[in-house]
Length: 276
Image (cartoon, rainbow, N blue to C red; front, side, top):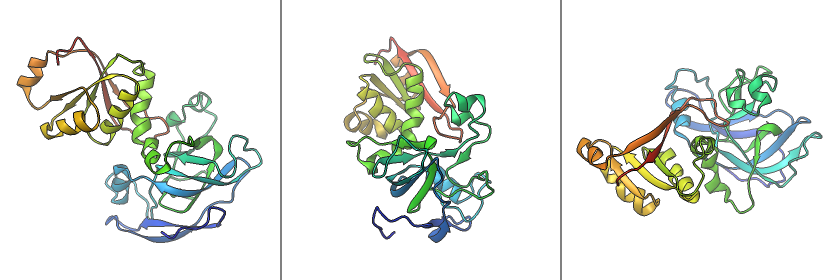
């Protein structure tokens, strides 16, 4: 994608879209709405690739409307703000996750829990209230209501921070909610995929002891040597699981995602008196 100056404010947007279930992306020109009084316009600099994007591209879940421009791990620089926008200014580094609008009237919205809104508008492949269909971050510009824009710290690299808008908040939300941010606690991470990687990094930053539980023995070195986990259990080996004598104090199978409308399953285990 050709880069344009950060001061450029195109009405017409350019992105990459799939037109059928092959999932093949091709150049795509489309229009973004004008910046409203409550809106923030950003020039997109980076957008992460989530596996849910791939599912949507190929219509694996059965609700894709083509052409579709995916992408919900969006970071960039503010180029324009509406008259009612007070918390953002031109030049700010910001991010956008998977929700770009909600009803703002229901109980969940009133409690800043838009992910539970019965009428959410997702970042792409979602009907907007004006009848148009949203298009995501595989593009060069975006217009978003200020409520769904996040500020990025100056010391956080935008490219590295993009996945935090998906995998990061998915694991951080239950850790925060259940008090797994206090040094000395013991966290079990079930599975070492995209979410598991981020969960370990966050847990170690909080000063937690981390045990990774995986069915893949070959991931042990990655979990301990590369990511800093304290121990590793192979769940596909009943004998080793029995020897470990893990007493699970609590298992939280969560379907809560901050700024996420899709339902995923994250297992965080609080381990007690483990012999590891």
